Amino acid sequence: MFDKMEIELNKFPGVTYEFTQPIQMRFNELMTGVRQDIAIKIFGEDLGVLVERAHAAEAILKTLPGIGDVKVEATAGLQQMVVDYELEKMATYGVSVAQLNDILKASFAGKSAGFFMKESAVLI
Image (cartoon, rainbow, N blue to C red; front, side, top):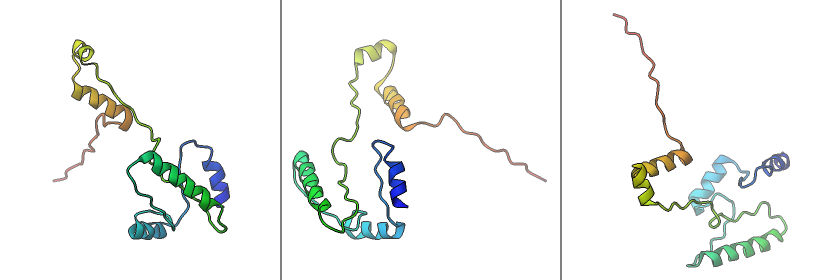
């Protein structure tokens, strides 16, 4: 069953997933701060070195018999967008930094355009 789900989920690039039971996942997270049954935490200052060591540990773990899915937590390479404000052009069009931030936020996270209220009948 898990094999079939994994085949289908692998069709979506960039999607990470894990197969577990909700209670087991919560218990693991409460105990160690991670959701997996076994966790290796590597600490240090240099993010690049940490990612390198994490992948080295992953490679070793995958060679051990009885090990299921091994997953390195994504801490590097996450997508981000950097905005350089051209204040002169913004002033030309009368756009403030706050307005542009609002537009960017709505573009990525969405924003409510309005709402409907259901009128309720009052019987006297």
